Length: 265
Image 1 (spheres, rainbow, N blue to C red):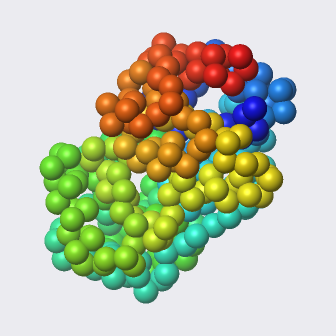
Image 2: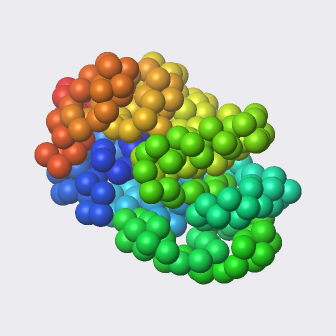
């Protein structure tokens, strides 16, 4: 029996840039009514994930920043891991020296050194508004930083940045990507998978009672950490090949289909 159901947001629960469908909201409410704890797990900042969670109509815990922050809809922090202040400064310096775009989420507020097409793209897809500050000011935003994110022009450029970061900082950071153009920097050992384990422990739920659903490469640790896993029809092949089940596409309410077929069956 499933007691904890964990869902990715973009490409899973909703089509990026759109609202959660009525069918998917209904599926979540059915799970909650059946006594199942439902959570969403995302690379998004809490502020960007909150409106989505609120539309679900339930006080679900939200796993945000790729697992660095677990916080309920009503604002209770269940778990948080922040990058050390001196390390944030080092990373900002590393990016400024190379003139690579970087944004910071200090205190769940979005900051970037200069507005660009990258910020316009990010703000429009995430439905958040950030603050343009200088590189010097960015170095001072070191309090409660769950994540730093760089946006590049291509997947190849993202791969280069990830390799450069790993070479420079080694095991001082965890580097992942939730989108072909996003390089995300979080604390070592932090992932959606680690957050699921923490939340399951807090709820007294066994791994076998956890189901996760997702579509992207950064969902893989989360999907493998769950007792049962579902890949969206629009998921990458590497994700489909790693999961127990494959459901329909995101745009066809594959999320609701999976809930009916594998959870409420």
